[in-house]
Image (tube, rainbow, N blue to C red; front, side, top):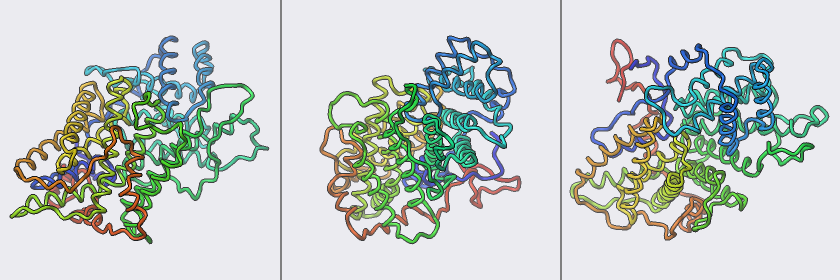
Length: 540
């Protein structure tokens, strides 16, 4: 493996960085970051983009486009279904009638359709849809001086598929590029009705803008990186449910779409508030409180049809399910630094002679328990998806959520609370599912399995080191509900009381967030001991 000579920043807010911090907290000596090498390589994609890719036969083309529209349009708005289906039929009847933008859009839809309609990737063949994807990227060789909205749609689709290839930086760059092109076109501003009377076209512009906005913030929050545009620069209306002259299903429920973009905005706000190193006017305590209050307000304002009930009611539809999984992820990201602090305090107590019970503030216990409850809820939802067959093999989001919740449950299993054994079992189940996804060819699962395997080694070593020492059951408490939701976790009385306090002493987070004075994880490692005369060498 060739090692780059320029170190790559691993954002502290990313799941991979948190997994590394977890291992460092329980290992002796500390472990280095595990490099991400499980993704589709540049060289392979460049080679594929130069090769001829045959256009699928009509029946296959229709199938792939319909599958892609089903999965993409379920949670996001990128293209108008009616226009895509019409364009596909015209292209099938007369291949020369389609311009390069429409053909590129269809190529990437073929890629997404093949990815979602495939259950396993053959070892000796390309990742499902990768040849179509590489063919679609040819359009990126020239950046149009006068972009059309089609160019933005293509970049959003390419960004979406890039995650399945575990090319997270590519997805982030494409989403940011989509925002930039949208600004060039003025999509971030309202167009006077006198200049654009077509209601459908106006709504399409608005929704494409907000999808670019959401993608940029979602991918940025997953990586812990900055966003491409600030909210103060945006003046366009939120999505609506337009009444069209010609009935169609192009524009799905706007309330779901608005909830998704609000959550994406919250995610970026959480990262900027809790993980930033820039001087802030408000204390860290105030910023953590505000983040959790915003999340709780989000749940309270969510329309009833987008809630997941904590009962044995009929299975939730994919839309609320994806929304709640993303909500859980944002809540976990906001609170897991506190959970890491709690773990470090326990480890210090275990290593003390004579051994003593850890002294942990009630505020820390309450916030870390909220983190664990959200992880339990996500893990339960994802296991249910696995059981009922709705967990797509190559879906990046479900795979990431599974890994994120599994890491939190691994920590919880080490902290002797009422549900530590149950959390250990859920962690093991999640690890097994990730391993199966890896065997089926999921790039992200392959990366995450390396982290999980490293966690298990460190966890076994820690358990052997601490022996039979057990902390008295004054720690994390379970939630006395059979199927708790994340919204319930943030509405739990002790947490509500904590958030209502005008001044909250969370100074312990500082030590937890910036443990050992780390200025962020890099790979290759930029520490002096990893330097050699020939350049950077990998840190782990």
